[in-house]
Image (cartoon, rainbow, N blue to C red):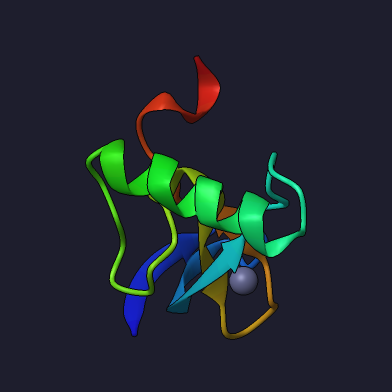
Length: 78
Ligand SMILES: [Zn+2]
């Protein structure tokens, strides 16, 4: 747990990190999923949970009010 400033609470509160899988740009079939996996794999960055980092959102969630802060870094907003 991290102590992070929460905009909603207006003070530092305990936060926990959660990871959500983004809706994939690939289809739902096994073949498409495999393609997505390979793309992620050869893209160079695979996360410990086996999903491409491109496909997950990381949030810090305030344990007090439930406010979520998106923690993605890098190329999400290009
Ligand atoms: Zn809060």
